Image (cartoon, rainbow, N blue to C red; front, side, top):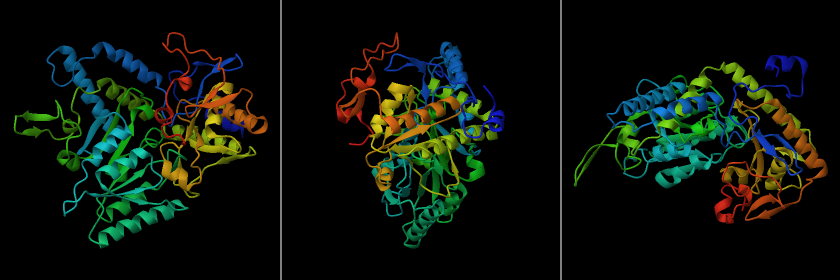
Length: 474
């Protein structure tokens, strides 16, 4: 395949020859189609779960023979595993520019990290839960924990990014003036619906000017852009391994130590304590305070390996690759009659590789099922765990999201565009129906992967609608 520079020189519109920046596992996995053909699977659902980098998979393979108990074992492999775990913690913190006095807590994912921090927000002077300010654009992971654990106020996003930041600043100022200041402003680094970003420097200034701290939900930002706590002044960042090309159950919360040292331990159990008596418990400080139980050493190692691989890529190359794919996606989709692309702000500070759209006359679930069954393209449909935002934008019935990353090839984007154009013009060729809230192919002939242990495609599994739909429309 050609390089990005060569592609720009010889092709203005198409990105068909654009190669991935780094190899990922499963890039050439064959996907059977309903017409009997087989094509390489085009994974354009990176925003949900990114495929593992090949280097990450290799690191895990090398680590498995060294796997043993962590922190409390005297054996050689226990010592090796403990060293790997703690070294991974340092690598993860360094990747997001942790300050010398910051703490890195290894968690399962961004949701885990945000729930953990929600239990550490200090109470107000009167003993009431600490006040937290959020936007209505947030993923549920950065919305629901604050409603449950804190005194949360929701600000509706405005028509421009600048006006949205100003609305947050005004609410922070009003709270401080009333003697009920906010402890925390928590905002997504990049929207998981549109990929658009607010100005981080403006957010930091707005929070700090009014005595609040800033948490950045980095799930969609950290894997796609260089980020530094120290350089930006952000107080906390949370992100997931499974979106950072390390899908082995690891994630991180990185930030200022004092709240985490004093907060309620996230889980009660071994490893989080200094001493336990029948009538009292003495807890560790962070990070051990919030990492009770046997830690996920393989998750930590895989996330650290992904951080190292991403850090080794030139930041400009990473941005240019993703920008080229995203621009082609947006331009190609907007050129198709009946297709609308969702946007939040015309003045977004940046936009990562997330593009959400609708096709007139087609349910979002049908579009996603069609792309998979007839073209081997994987996308996400529904409300993307961002119900308030989709409702405000008028898409409560759901939409379709295509997302790209470091392992995406231009051919995959071109295949999606051709498939959507065909659908908009001619409709699907196969027959589809809704079963338990999911669109499926009627009499789906596609086989399941050999050796997978599956008896049928997951879309036809006997799940009730309440269990199956998740963040899909009702």
